[in-house]
Image 1 (cartoon, one colour):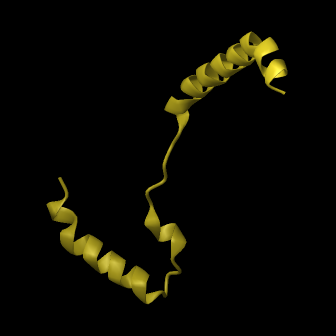
Image 2 (cartoon, rainbow, N blue to C red; image 1 turned 90 degrees about the vertical axis):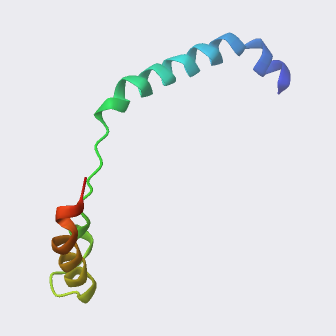
Length: 62
């Protein structure tokens, strides 16, 4: 097993480099949705509390 890994080490290095380059190219396209309301129902008490706190402290966000 080790002999096979050592025999083809340059191929593995090239594949690893290609994967890293591909990931680096795709990384700027990652988007994060920060809208927490999608996880709650409209009639949920926690969601109502969240909306109250969000409206109360919205002026304090920097």
